[in-house]
Length: 529
Ligand code: AMP
Ligand code: MG
Image (cartoon, rainbow, N blue to C red; front, top):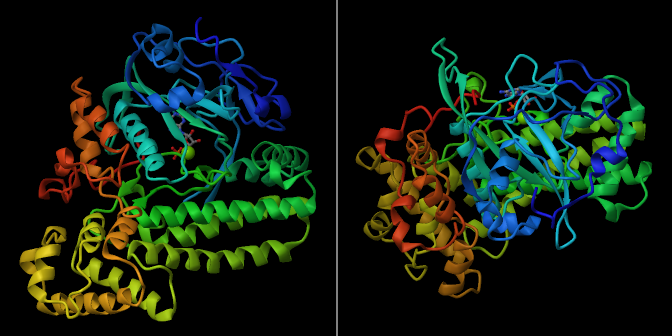
């Protein structure tokens, strides 16, 4: 097979113990970090989309994706020399409850590439057939969820948010049975495989599982491997280094969640098995993007009752998840106090970084005081009660002329009209509150010495114009299911430059149309994928 330029150095399997059994029969796997398992062959694979820039980063040439071997490779039909496919063993807390062993039920790591620029990237197929961790499920993925994972991974990357990436999206040519609403109405859907790419697919749950089984040998091996591979600057692993490492995982997680809050991303399933140890957004399932700003919103139908993973809870949940990680690594540190202290600091760190992020969204140089924080909270309250589009609001705010010392109601209404979902029923009191807020904001913004052009540019650099609105993804999926991938490609192109004005694509920056408000796939998503 071609692609001679790719070389592999599979550190995870070189450094960590494997499951001695080599079948893909479902089982509990002890004293091993992974199981060797081959992808399942598929009948008629086709390439739907590829991320060219990532392909080249990995070491492919611009022409390689036209090669039949490329689609064979990334649909699971072929392997390259040096690849040693394996599924990872991990556990996790799901919706707050310990779930025991989970593992890669439908993900298979092909190998770790040494890139031309001397980076190390793991290639992973999602939906390439069963593994020992598939439990009662089939190890497969359908087109609808694969389009969502493919587009959103790259959308997040281009927003500058830490994430696993997506190299390719292939159709398998096979039909996969899914009951999307868990209502007994299953149907065949097109099968698909996404190739995900990351420096590490290790999750909080990877450490939790050996800890829960009292397997301190494996726990230590996993932590040492993670530090050596992904946190090499920390030096030789030791108790002190474990603490520093935990602290860095807190830093990375905090930065990632604050970024989610900045752009209105709701992960939807922040179980500890879906938390990356290198602080990347991982496992794009029933995620969603805020249209109207609403801290209570969750796209995940499984979470409707408790709203554990709603937008406004993501900061707290991340702390809860870090607490579970701290519990898991405690046996190697044997001191609760420093871990507890770091977790306490996390709450403060999160608040502080959130406030800094909000300052930037509002074009302020920094958060100066409690009064600024009140300004941020008051804005979020008003955006919620007046049902305003979050993304459009911040772009419009960047256009607000600050020299309007006293904000004129008519002028601001004109500017923000495009953000309201219920303009007709806008309560005069709420209108007045917004007016008041704008006045306070202008007064505050004028205390910073910054030119109008610089202010607008700074705001537009952190407030995206284009995000993967739920209904846009759904429209692309519906066409894709009929064999038309033009919208997938269009969105892929559009979301390469989310902060730039793209006049030809203005329609993708509009607020959610009314028909999409309660439509499945647009506002509600199940875990079925
Ligand atoms: P998720 O909620 O997608 O993070 O998945 C939770 C667990 O279920 C993970 O261990 C997945 O690998 C597994 N899983 C989800 N869907 C499937 C599937 N179709 N086949 C096998 N395992 C799956
Ligand atoms: Mg998962």
